[in-house]
Image 1 (cartoon, rainbow, N blue to C red):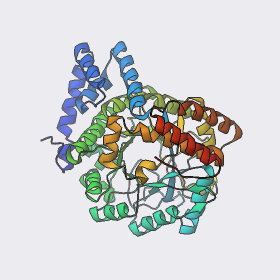
Image 2 (image 1 turned 90 degrees about the horizontal axis):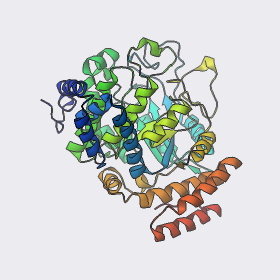
Image 3 (image 1 turned 30 degrees about the vertical axis):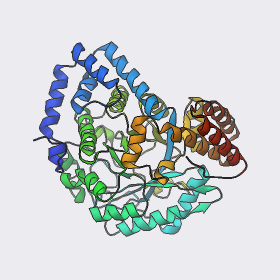
Image 4 (image 1 turned 120 degrees about the vertical axis):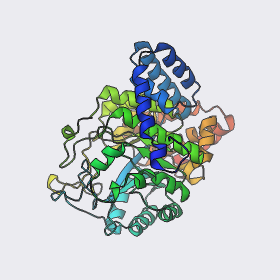
Amino acid sequence: MYDPKSSKATDFIHDGEIRESLEFAQKNKANKELIDSILKKAGEMKGISHREAAVLLECELEEENREIERLAREIKRRFYGNRIVMFAPLYLSNYCVNGCTYCPYHHCNEHIRRKKLSQEEIRREVIALQDMGHKRLAIEAGEDPVNNPLEYILESIETIYGIKHKNGAIRRVNVNIAATTVENYRRLHDAGIGTYILFQETYNKESYETLHPTGPKHDYAYHTEAMDRAMDGGIDDVGLGVLFGLNMYRYELVGIIMHAEHLEAKYGVGPHTISVPRICPADDIDPGNFSNAISDEIFQKIVAVIRIAVPYTGMIVSTRESKETRRKALDLGISQISGGSRTSVGGYAEEETEEENSAQFDVSDRRTLDEVVNWLLSLGYIPSFCTACYREGRTGDRFMKLLKSGQIVNCCQPNALMTLKEYLEDYASEDTKKKGEELIQRELEVITNPAVRKKAAEYIESIHEGIRDFRF
């Protein structure tokens, strides 16, 4: 039976419950009275259930669909304001023993260049990222116990945190590696990671096992229960995600919200982030071979419905998506984006040639970090390089309590402005600096607490004078 508190994957991601929810949504996609009642509940900004989210996704009523978008925007502003957190992926190794049919790192791919960064090469990559202005990384590696053992990941994290170049420093390392044991998650926690990220790819067990025909990732239960083990190992910030296009998008939307409900029910805190990647071209992977690819319109609605269903979670969209798609997604709920990204192993210090390709997927948004920051400023957003909550111990339920109560704004707004000021002083082009300084002055006035506003202004002046790393 469906049981969100169970530790068993097929209990909290219950196929029967998902299919009943989808059937219910189909039957009620034009039920104005029901949909209006769901929207009224959503307006309380405390979330809605997976079944209610399925109804909103199926909704065919024009006026109600406009209200879905309006609500998503309002919820985004309530919880995250106009702040957009910046990060970059860092690929350590593309050696992998799995046979995933949608990923060019699969072990049968004989023409992709296999690479693993040495600690010195990691150092060069991190310095290149610091010289762009990045403060937050998500490290990635294929699953290979020989080439990419946990000891290698732990050594790499230590290397990354230890590099201070000019005014640069990586202040938060998030980790996206294969499902592992409670003991290994405890070791990652002790190494000081930020968020542990693991994409489910698809919540449909049958599709999952077909898409992962060989390798340890074939085990649906072990993979799906990974977040439970991570939390049992002391990691209280975890990031969920599915790869839209592999299976029916309706199924995946319900599945990822059920996963969030499970973490909330069992641990009292839901996911720190939800990512919404879509399958895209990559080496020997052709998206045309996957019949469940989704349109931009459906993608935008998925973003809006997730934002309504799980209002407290950060939402991430990567450079898989184009500039225009990312602009629309930002408006509807996205709170974190990557900038200046490379998806190859070792692509920051020295860009790869086409013949040397080691990338996991093709990048659609190829702008530099400064171009992305400039664009965000032009749209009225605050590009934030803040890592203060993680470094001040505001993680897991402590972070969520502050977020849900609205008190987090007293930290996030000034921290965002101060880290933007650091970026402007150390890395920005003249045009970006001009736009950023104007935005900082405007946004300081938005801080409602006079003491916080005064102290933030003092810190920002000190940053101009050369001092770094203030935080609330």
